Length: 432
Image (cartoon, rainbow, N blue to C red; front, side, top):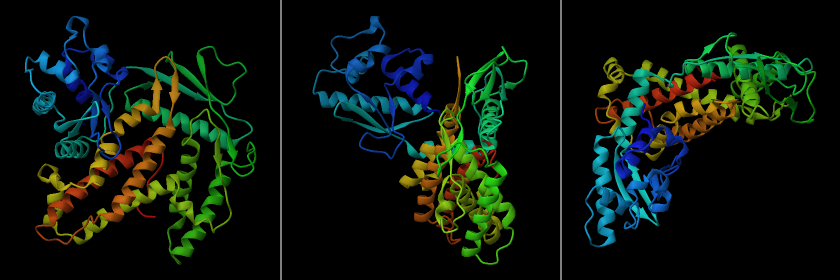
């Protein structure tokens, strides 16, 4: 997978020389724009030398340079007395040229109000990211560590106990992806509990989680259970489904999957130390249910799967075989801003999202809300793309390349969706 950290390292190394790569996470010199590309490009850094002092070695301090671009040219012995504008362009072109040997290439740059802004080579990134995830799937950096998690059941709330159990399952899934050994012989043992007092085994550290409450009454729930919650939601979903598609069969399994996904997003979508508010309504008129949280994520996964079913059923064997050869796909056809955003902000960043969902340094910090928010944002962005972009085209020679490129993008997105849902222990459904 393309690594933006490597790009930052390449830029810093090119400008100032040797740096301590272990300090990169603590530095905030090169800023990556994760939103829609703006006037600041895909990344930028300040031109003022003061912003660079912590990475410029004292022996290399240059009091004569007016900014970091001049410093860079002087260090490379390319500085020539002349107009500042000429030297700015020379420095930017030198960085773009140097990036030709990097895994991520700079396309162009400019100086905007003391910010040196660069656009990336979108085509090379899109090609690399999509091919990598389709061929190799998703992998995280491996750690040779151990951990053990245990749940202290809440005797007064079945839903709170369910939350604790799902937090444990979620954390263990992330740890396993990072190569952890989950074993009770680990010196790192944590008890997930709502009780901040009372005695626990000496070998355990306490990890405090909060309760599940009723969003309407704002009281600590004692009577509602996971099964009663699901039963109500399934009943409501069946009514809504019957209103929209009368006579449709196969409701039970689908409705339960949707209800379970909704519940898990409600209890995992907030920080563990915050209270989780769930809302159960018997009012079948609340038709916006299916556009919230986990249900909306499943809805968009089903959309992608439906596209692939139609592709398999209606297109020729020759076209379907061409789709299987990812090395022959022309990813330069993915030129829309929405396509770049899906690759750059979601497929590319997904491994980092997983890493940020669980922190285990001196203390343990579980952040399932990070992954839930990521999936919700991805679903919204894909939904916009889906409504504005034609994926399956007529099977004409000049239309097939862009269709196969877009199908490859969807295949990569589906890998991310399925992987994230598996981490959350949510089962996708083939159709809504």
